[in-house]
Image 1 (cartoon, rainbow, N blue to C red):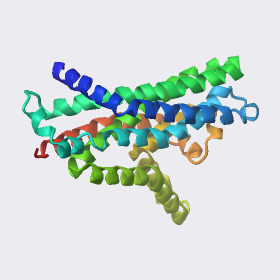
Image 2 (image 1 turned 180 degrees about the vertical axis):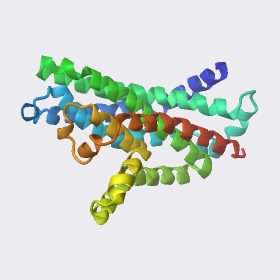
Image 3 (image 1 turned 30 degrees about the horizontal axis):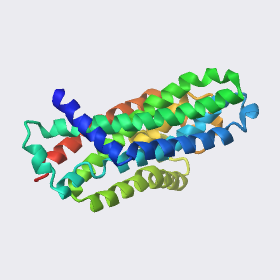
Length: 273
Protein backbone atom coordinates (compact mmCIF):
# COMPACT_ATOMS: atom_id res chain seq x y z
CA UNK A 1 0.00 0.00 0.00
CA UNK A 2 2.88 2.38 0.77
CA UNK A 3 4.36 1.80 -2.68
CA UNK A 4 0.99 2.36 -4.34
CA UNK A 5 0.46 5.63 -2.46
CA UNK A 6 3.98 6.79 -3.29
CA UNK A 7 3.34 6.12 -6.97
CA UNK A 8 -0.02 7.87 -6.73
CA UNK A 9 1.63 10.92 -5.15
CA UNK A 10 4.24 11.12 -7.90
CA UNK A 11 1.60 10.67 -10.60
CA UNK A 12 -0.59 13.35 -9.02
CA UNK A 13 2.25 15.85 -9.35
CA UNK A 14 2.62 14.92 -13.01
CA UNK A 15 -1.12 15.35 -13.56
CA UNK A 16 -1.02 18.79 -11.95
CA UNK A 17 2.02 19.80 -13.97
CA UNK A 18 0.30 18.71 -17.19
CA UNK A 19 -2.77 20.76 -16.14
CA UNK A 20 -5.08 17.79 -16.62
CA UNK A 21 -6.91 18.64 -13.41
CA UNK A 22 -7.54 22.22 -14.50
CA UNK A 23 -8.66 21.14 -17.97
CA UNK A 24 -11.00 18.46 -16.62
CA UNK A 25 -12.51 20.82 -14.03
CA UNK A 26 -13.00 23.55 -16.62
CA UNK A 27 -14.72 21.18 -19.05
CA UNK A 28 -17.06 19.77 -16.43
CA UNK A 29 -17.83 23.20 -14.95
CA UNK A 30 -18.65 24.88 -18.26
CA UNK A 31 -20.86 22.11 -19.62
CA UNK A 32 -22.60 21.56 -16.27
CA UNK A 33 -23.46 25.25 -15.92
CA UNK A 34 -24.76 25.42 -19.48
CA UNK A 35 -26.97 22.38 -18.95
CA UNK A 36 -28.14 23.73 -15.60
CA UNK A 37 -29.15 27.00 -17.25
CA UNK A 38 -30.99 25.38 -20.15
CA UNK A 39 -32.20 22.15 -18.57
CA UNK A 40 -34.70 23.66 -16.14
CA UNK A 41 -37.00 24.91 -18.90
CA UNK A 42 -39.31 21.83 -18.86
CA UNK A 43 -39.57 21.80 -15.06
CA UNK A 44 -43.16 22.96 -14.90
CA UNK A 45 -44.36 20.53 -17.54
CA UNK A 46 -42.70 17.57 -15.84
CA UNK A 47 -43.70 18.47 -12.31
CA UNK A 48 -40.13 17.89 -11.09
CA UNK A 49 -37.73 20.19 -9.30
CA UNK A 50 -35.03 21.96 -11.37
CA UNK A 51 -32.20 19.82 -9.98
CA UNK A 52 -33.92 16.55 -10.98
CA UNK A 53 -34.40 17.85 -14.51
CA UNK A 54 -30.80 19.05 -14.63
CA UNK A 55 -29.61 15.61 -13.47
CA UNK A 56 -31.25 14.02 -16.51
CA UNK A 57 -29.24 16.38 -18.72
CA UNK A 58 -26.05 15.83 -16.68
CA UNK A 59 -26.45 12.08 -17.17
CA UNK A 60 -26.27 12.51 -20.94
CA UNK A 61 -23.31 14.88 -20.53
CA UNK A 62 -21.42 12.43 -18.33
CA UNK A 63 -21.88 9.59 -20.83
CA UNK A 64 -19.87 11.55 -23.39
CA UNK A 65 -17.52 13.68 -21.31
CA UNK A 66 -16.41 11.45 -18.40
CA UNK A 67 -15.12 8.59 -20.63
CA UNK A 68 -13.37 11.10 -22.89
CA UNK A 69 -11.57 12.78 -19.97
CA UNK A 70 -10.63 9.39 -18.50
CA UNK A 71 -9.18 8.14 -21.79
CA UNK A 72 -7.24 11.36 -22.37
CA UNK A 73 -5.75 11.05 -18.89
CA UNK A 74 -4.71 7.44 -19.30
CA UNK A 75 -3.67 6.92 -22.93
CA UNK A 76 0.03 7.70 -22.31
CA UNK A 77 0.27 6.31 -18.79
CA UNK A 78 2.40 3.40 -20.03
CA UNK A 79 3.20 4.32 -23.63
CA UNK A 80 4.54 7.67 -22.48
CA UNK A 81 6.83 6.02 -19.93
CA UNK A 82 8.18 3.71 -22.65
CA UNK A 83 8.80 6.52 -25.14
CA UNK A 84 10.45 8.82 -22.58
CA UNK A 85 12.66 5.98 -21.36
CA UNK A 86 11.54 6.36 -17.74
CA UNK A 87 9.95 2.91 -17.46
CA UNK A 88 13.29 1.03 -17.09
CA UNK A 89 14.25 3.40 -14.27
CA UNK A 90 10.93 2.92 -12.48
CA UNK A 91 11.22 -0.85 -12.78
CA UNK A 92 14.60 -0.83 -11.03
CA UNK A 93 12.80 0.06 -7.79
CA UNK A 94 11.37 -2.71 -5.59
CA UNK A 95 7.82 -2.24 -6.86
CA UNK A 96 5.53 -4.52 -8.80
CA UNK A 97 4.03 -3.48 -12.11
CA UNK A 98 0.56 -3.94 -10.68
CA UNK A 99 1.44 -1.48 -7.90
CA UNK A 100 2.68 1.06 -10.43
CA UNK A 101 -0.58 0.79 -12.35
CA UNK A 102 -2.70 0.98 -9.20
CA UNK A 103 -0.82 4.10 -8.12
CA UNK A 104 -1.47 5.78 -11.47
CA UNK A 105 -5.09 4.66 -11.28
CA UNK A 106 -5.52 6.16 -7.81
CA UNK A 107 -4.11 9.55 -8.85
CA UNK A 108 -6.06 9.76 -12.10
CA UNK A 109 -9.31 8.65 -10.50
CA UNK A 110 -8.92 11.26 -7.74
CA UNK A 111 -8.38 13.99 -10.34
CA UNK A 112 -11.40 12.83 -12.31
CA UNK A 113 -13.57 12.64 -9.19
CA UNK A 114 -12.56 16.19 -8.27
CA UNK A 115 -13.54 17.46 -11.72
CA UNK A 116 -16.89 15.67 -11.58
CA UNK A 117 -17.59 16.96 -8.06
CA UNK A 118 -16.88 20.57 -9.07
CA UNK A 119 -19.03 20.32 -12.20
CA UNK A 120 -21.99 18.73 -10.46
CA UNK A 121 -21.61 21.03 -7.47
CA UNK A 122 -21.87 24.11 -9.67
CA UNK A 123 -24.94 22.67 -11.40
CA UNK A 124 -26.55 21.97 -8.03
CA UNK A 125 -25.75 25.49 -6.83
CA UNK A 126 -27.38 26.99 -9.92
CA UNK A 127 -30.46 24.83 -9.39
CA UNK A 128 -30.75 25.91 -5.74
CA UNK A 129 -30.54 29.57 -6.78
CA UNK A 130 -33.53 29.11 -9.08
CA UNK A 131 -35.61 26.96 -6.71
CA UNK A 132 -35.01 26.17 -3.04
CA UNK A 133 -37.06 22.97 -3.49
CA UNK A 134 -34.19 21.45 -5.45
CA UNK A 135 -33.08 19.63 -2.28
CA UNK A 136 -35.35 16.77 -3.35
CA UNK A 137 -32.91 15.99 -6.14
CA UNK A 138 -29.81 15.69 -3.94
CA UNK A 139 -29.98 11.87 -3.55
CA UNK A 140 -30.11 11.53 -7.35
CA UNK A 141 -27.15 13.91 -7.66
CA UNK A 142 -25.09 11.87 -5.22
CA UNK A 143 -25.97 8.71 -7.14
CA UNK A 144 -24.94 10.41 -10.37
CA UNK A 145 -21.61 11.40 -8.80
CA UNK A 146 -20.47 7.99 -7.62
CA UNK A 147 -21.71 6.23 -10.75
CA UNK A 148 -19.80 8.82 -12.83
CA UNK A 149 -16.67 7.94 -10.86
CA UNK A 150 -17.29 4.25 -11.59
CA UNK A 151 -17.74 5.03 -15.28
CA UNK A 152 -14.51 7.03 -15.28
CA UNK A 153 -12.70 4.20 -13.49
CA UNK A 154 -13.75 1.75 -16.21
CA UNK A 155 -12.44 3.95 -19.01
CA UNK A 156 -9.25 4.81 -17.13
CA UNK A 157 -8.46 1.11 -16.90
CA UNK A 158 -9.37 0.58 -20.56
CA UNK A 159 -7.03 3.43 -21.46
CA UNK A 160 -4.19 1.77 -19.53
CA UNK A 161 -4.74 -1.49 -21.39
CA UNK A 162 -4.64 0.27 -24.77
CA UNK A 163 -1.57 2.26 -23.69
CA UNK A 164 0.25 -0.95 -22.81
CA UNK A 165 -0.73 -2.59 -26.08
CA UNK A 166 0.21 0.41 -28.24
CA UNK A 167 3.52 1.22 -26.46
CA UNK A 168 3.67 4.57 -28.32
CA UNK A 169 1.67 7.66 -27.26
CA UNK A 170 0.62 8.47 -30.84
CA UNK A 171 -0.75 5.01 -31.46
CA UNK A 172 -2.38 4.95 -28.02
CA UNK A 173 -4.09 8.28 -28.69
CA UNK A 174 -5.54 6.95 -31.92
CA UNK A 175 -6.75 3.80 -30.20
CA UNK A 176 -8.51 5.60 -27.35
CA UNK A 177 -10.25 8.08 -29.66
CA UNK A 178 -11.38 5.21 -31.87
CA UNK A 179 -12.60 3.29 -28.83
CA UNK A 180 -14.51 6.34 -27.57
CA UNK A 181 -16.25 6.73 -30.93
CA UNK A 182 -17.16 3.04 -31.04
CA UNK A 183 -18.36 2.61 -27.45
CA UNK A 184 -20.05 5.99 -26.97
CA UNK A 185 -21.37 6.88 -30.43
CA UNK A 186 -21.36 3.99 -32.90
CA UNK A 187 -22.43 1.31 -30.42
CA UNK A 188 -25.85 2.85 -29.78
CA UNK A 189 -26.32 3.68 -33.46
CA UNK A 190 -25.62 0.05 -34.36
CA UNK A 191 -28.13 -1.17 -31.78
CA UNK A 192 -30.73 1.25 -33.11
CA UNK A 193 -30.17 0.02 -36.67
CA UNK A 194 -30.49 -3.58 -35.47
CA UNK A 195 -33.76 -2.81 -33.68
CA UNK A 196 -35.20 -1.21 -36.80
CA UNK A 197 -34.16 -4.19 -38.90
CA UNK A 198 -35.49 -6.66 -36.32
CA UNK A 199 -38.93 -4.96 -36.24
CA UNK A 200 -39.87 -6.14 -32.76
CA UNK A 201 -38.44 -9.64 -33.07
CA UNK A 202 -36.31 -11.77 -30.75
CA UNK A 203 -33.32 -9.43 -30.94
CA UNK A 204 -35.34 -6.51 -29.55
CA UNK A 205 -36.92 -8.50 -26.73
CA UNK A 206 -34.12 -10.90 -25.73
CA UNK A 207 -30.72 -9.65 -26.92
CA UNK A 208 -31.01 -5.87 -26.98
CA UNK A 209 -31.32 -5.33 -23.17
CA UNK A 210 -28.21 -7.40 -22.47
CA UNK A 211 -26.21 -5.62 -25.16
CA UNK A 212 -27.17 -2.32 -23.56
CA UNK A 213 -25.91 -3.20 -20.10
CA UNK A 214 -22.79 -4.79 -21.62
CA UNK A 215 -21.60 -1.28 -22.49
CA UNK A 216 -20.55 0.62 -19.32
CA UNK A 217 -21.73 3.94 -20.76
CA UNK A 218 -25.22 2.61 -21.45
CA UNK A 219 -25.30 0.80 -18.10
CA UNK A 220 -24.45 4.09 -16.39
CA UNK A 221 -27.18 5.96 -18.24
CA UNK A 222 -29.80 3.26 -17.64
CA UNK A 223 -29.07 3.00 -13.93
CA UNK A 224 -29.39 6.74 -13.38
CA UNK A 225 -32.43 7.25 -15.59
CA UNK A 226 -34.26 4.31 -14.02
CA UNK A 227 -34.32 6.10 -10.65
CA UNK A 228 -34.76 9.61 -12.01
CA UNK A 229 -37.94 11.60 -11.53
CA UNK A 230 -37.30 13.35 -14.82
CA UNK A 231 -36.73 10.35 -17.08
CA UNK A 232 -39.11 11.84 -19.61
CA UNK A 233 -36.71 14.72 -20.10
CA UNK A 234 -34.00 12.41 -21.38
CA UNK A 235 -34.11 11.21 -24.93
CA UNK A 236 -33.16 7.86 -26.42
CA UNK A 237 -32.94 5.37 -23.55
CA UNK A 238 -35.77 6.58 -21.34
CA UNK A 239 -38.01 3.69 -22.38
CA UNK A 240 -35.26 1.12 -21.98
CA UNK A 241 -34.54 2.39 -18.48
CA UNK A 242 -38.02 1.29 -17.44
CA UNK A 243 -37.62 -2.26 -18.77
CA UNK A 244 -34.10 -3.24 -17.57
CA UNK A 245 -33.50 -4.04 -13.91
CA UNK A 246 -31.33 -1.31 -12.32
CA UNK A 247 -29.34 -3.95 -10.44
CA UNK A 248 -28.18 -5.43 -13.75
CA UNK A 249 -26.93 -2.05 -14.91
CA UNK A 250 -25.24 -1.45 -11.55
CA UNK A 251 -23.54 -4.86 -11.71
CA UNK A 252 -22.12 -3.94 -15.12
CA UNK A 253 -20.80 -0.64 -13.73
CA UNK A 254 -19.11 -2.41 -10.82
CA UNK A 255 -17.59 -5.20 -12.91
CA UNK A 256 -16.17 -3.11 -15.74
CA UNK A 257 -13.44 -1.32 -13.69
CA UNK A 258 -12.32 -4.62 -12.14
CA UNK A 259 -12.19 -6.51 -15.42
CA UNK A 260 -10.55 -3.67 -17.34
CA UNK A 261 -7.95 -3.06 -14.63
CA UNK A 262 -7.10 -6.76 -14.57
CA UNK A 263 -6.63 -6.74 -18.35
CA UNK A 264 -4.49 -3.61 -18.08
CA UNK A 265 -2.22 -5.24 -15.50
CA UNK A 266 -1.84 -8.33 -17.69
CA UNK A 267 -1.02 -6.18 -20.72
CA UNK A 268 1.48 -4.11 -18.70
CA UNK A 269 3.33 -7.24 -17.64
CA UNK A 270 4.08 -7.98 -21.30
CA UNK A 271 5.59 -4.54 -21.95
CA UNK A 272 9.37 -4.70 -22.29
CA UNK A 273 11.29 -1.55 -21.23
